[in-house]
Length: 370
Image 1 (cartoon, rainbow, N blue to C red):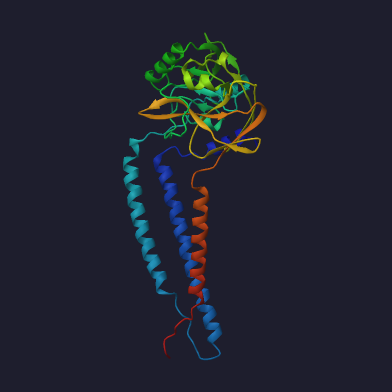
Image 2 (image 1 turned 30 degrees about the horizontal axis):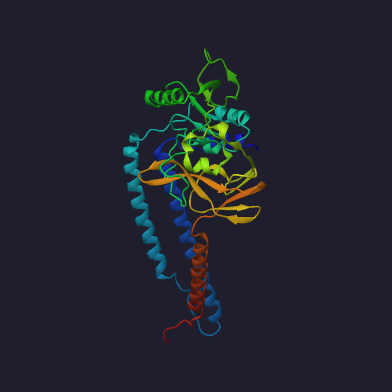
């Protein structure tokens, strides 16, 4: 089954109201509590039955009743059901505050066309107006340049001082004013400011194929796709002195594109060559989060940050790697900071809990005198 078939199958199971979503969540919680209570009752019953079978030859015993913890569990379950019913009733009364509806169009034709037009970048950078579909870009391996991805940390050492490298997407698109005039007007202003040129128009109807249509009179909903020649490549080689002293003057004609051999979620491999002479730097348009590790032909090297903008007084930007003369493979691997320490703490805690539980289970059970 293709990814499109999977998405079509899941579309029929999407919740279209807050009441449906909360109701399903409440049902799952209640089912989990019922299963947990049933397992508690069954385990205590089997334990009591085993005790009775072992002692029946020694003296007559009546079948023990389930432990008191079962009645406590049932009472808690009743309270949980009452509280859940109250919360569900409150949400049912106030669910008109939030509005849900099925999508009337899709940007997937734009994303598919991007991958056909831009074969040099593993994740084409695209500036698009904000809409409820803004996050669909990541599902289609397209970087939504205009979307604020949240926290972007500073990383030292920093190559430049108060001078920004150009951070501009190669692609941008605008579409009819479907979600408010402001978004479309901002997108059009961005396109005009950076001299984007019209590349093609695409229908954005649901399940539409990425087939260009007439920009002047396309049928149905359509989006206009633009391209700029000012954008820098995804990975490129540039003179180190130029990058440090005047990064804001670097244009695509001043750099040499590098080949992205592999691009996965946590690993990037770039093949690039540096000429003999002045030191060269390899720059990748990836935010330099703490945790990136760089190696050249398997040998670790120190990466730096070439800033693209200033947020307060914190330099933030892309990954820059000093290059060795000749052709080499540069590997970037992301390892979340503290992952090894967290795993060690987890394993120690798990071992301690296991030892404690084994000791508890090994203690003799004190029985009341007959």
